[in-house]
Image 1: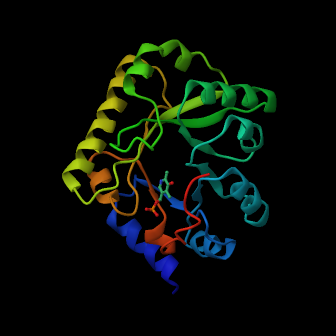
Image 2: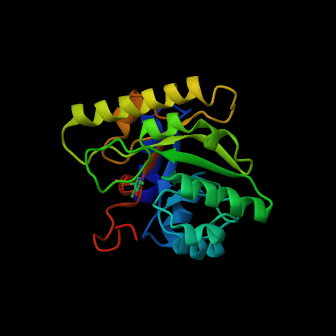
Length: 227
Ligand SMILES: *Cc1c(COP(=O)(O)O)cnc(C)c1O
C-alpha cells in the first residue's frame, strides 16, 4: 500500500467518524490525488483558483473542491461554478462578490467565514465584533449559504496557545449561532486543525480538519505560499 493511502487510513482511525477530512492537495500532482481518491477520500482543499481549475479538468467529477486560501474578488466569477465550498471568506466585500456571482450563475455557494484567531498579523479574517455588529449583511444574502467558521491557529510549538485559539473560535461559533444563525440549519461546521494541530482542534470541537503534509508529505517550500 502506498504511503498516501496508509496516511489517510491512519488519520481516519485517529479521529471520530463525524469529523470530515479535507485533504489539502495544494502543489501536489493529480496522481497523488488519485491515490487518496482510491481510499474513498472525496473532499480536497486547494488555495489557488487556477490550481483548482486545472486539477478539476483532469480528475474525477465527484471530487468536492474546497477553496481554503485567500480569494481575490476578480477571481470569484471563475471559482464559483467549480467549488463545493469556499472556506476562506474574509471580508464582506468578498462575501457580497460571491453572492453576486452565484446569483448570476444560478447557484447557491456554500461558504465558511474565516475568523482571525492567530497572533500573526499576516493571517486574514473577520473579527468576531464586525460580524456581530452587522448581522443584516449575513442573513440577507440569498445565493450564499453560510455553513460555519474557519480559522488557523498561530504557527507555534506552544500547544496551550493553539488550544486557547481553537477554544476561542469554538466560542465565536456558539456566539454567532446564538445571535445570528439560530434559524440557519446549515450553520454547523467548524473548520479548524491542520497536520500539526488537528488533535487539539478535534478535542476543541472541530468538525472539519484540513490536512496536507501529514497525508501527502512535505510540500516544496517555494510553492506553498499563498498568492
Ligand atoms: C496549507 C493549508 C493547510 C494544510 O496544512 P498542513 O500543515 O500541510 O496540513 C490547511 N489550511 C490552510 C488554510 C492551508 O493553507
